[in-house]
Length: 154
Image 1 (cartoon, rainbow, N blue to C red):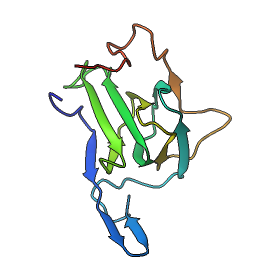
Image 2: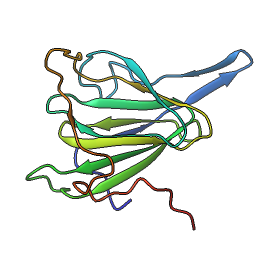
Image 3: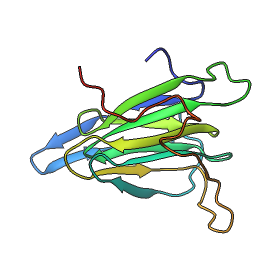
């Protein structure tokens, strides 16, 4: 990765195991990346499934993959951004427990790269408005974003 897209932040998460199981704090109100609370939701993807591209005009997202592995990809198409045109890939999940903060107007999507269903917890800053969703979509396999979701072997 050449550099992070402007406004994107990553928090390394710490897993605390003991004989009963494990604990992992994801986000706290006293974290320096905390903005505000909107809601919490879980979304999943089956192996090989791509859910992309979308962005928000108001909402910040905070992704944590709690089961399986995801390739989360961001694209900066923002006018005037110092990182316009940059693509970031993050391999997140059981083998890399991180929280990924995604700013408004940054396109994002993910692909399940594990052999079983992967689960993402999102803590967005806004409550989902069913009447007027703050969600804008592009074709995941179109030409609007210079990225291909294929696996790259080598």
